[in-house]
Length: 325
Image (cartoon, rainbow, N blue to C red):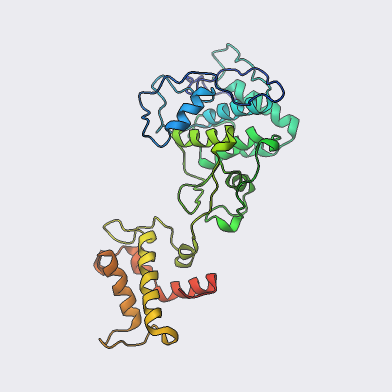
């Protein structure tokens, strides 16, 4: 049964118009508007081209305060974007909003999506909490809305990447997110392809993915960086290891370099407990060499550093990779 939205009316934060039905072969997302510029978007900003494109094709035309690139996206805005994208993909117009002050500004977008899902029978609709659309949306919420927009329009989306669940650090057994990686619309929050599904996202981040949804030529080929060391270390790349802010991403590089150097020196005789000419074990040298390379001391180590066991880490790394450094 369709859930009724009873939230109070909100100020419209995504100004969206209505596209006419598309003729066969017509550009799905043509330029509709002349970009006037936003006071809060500079040409040097990483999201400039995305914000401009989204304005030109009528998907996101900002707020009364500007584009507000750092503003957190809400579920209601996600619904509006999904409906707007689906309209462009299908050519089926969004109905005009009913002039009723008791209805939320986004209700006609929700109604549009509801009707589309009823036609397709998709299960995506049930993932979303439709009674709390005015709260900030998570990154995963946004992807589900984008899946609603794309549902049934597979001819417009094709795989340009060939990733599996195992290639991504925190996207296990979730096909909704995986398809966006393989379409080249999502690349994660870092070079490892971390999804961070529970984080919120900004309007700038949303604009980047919306632009890729609309324009296939903007989609990204993507090969995630190797995450195996962090799996072996039971750490994430951004784990702070020292009180000066050095992270596991930097520390594990230093550790691996130190281990590799001692393996080169000792060859098949590499052993953690081998005592070098200065009376220190290889294990002691690896620890000290790693610290020296980073310009830090043991005293600066955080709890994560103190809990880190070099031997256990390297044993797990060999198990996972099948080879030494």
